[in-house]
Amino acid sequence: MMFPVVNFNYMNWFMIKDYLTFTIDPERPGGGSVQAKDPDPLAGMSLSDLQAAYTQIAKDNPDSFSENEDQFKEIMRRMLEDENDEIIVPSNSLYIEALPGTHPLLEDFKLIHRAVDVKKAQAEVRHAELENLRLASRLVSNELGDPDIDKVVVIGSGQSVTVDAGQ
Image 1 (cartoon, rainbow, N blue to C red):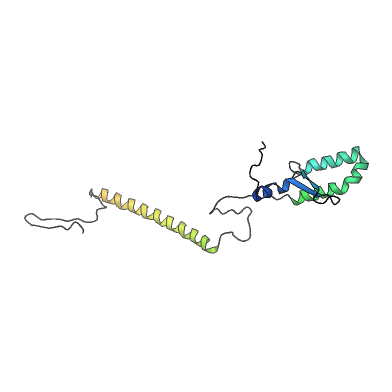
Image 2: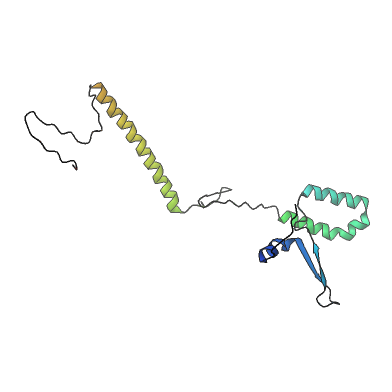
């Protein structure tokens, strides 16, 4: 869809600069033209498509082929150079290592911190396992009281005791 531009500004110029070609007419001061162009003339064309066209034109029209051979070679060179793809990942805390490298992408501190996190998780699992064994041994010895009581206050009969609520 195409819409008319209502308020033209520098951002519009920035966005359309790849789609326009400006020519200047030296015979007319201030004269020239603006033409639309494809910003990526090789879009959608694969190397095999270009090779097939290259072979077909060389076979069907050798004169045209010899006239445009340098342009074919330039297009082929550009396509071979543009084999890399750029991936933009919108994240503030994502680490990606696309290919195994000789050096890790994370700093040494972060790598060590990850190892510490693993050790901490292992210790928490061991603590939970020991706590389960302790609770099981309480059941075996018929200790059915709550094992997580912080404080027990025993008041004998006939004694007057005042317990401060803050303790």
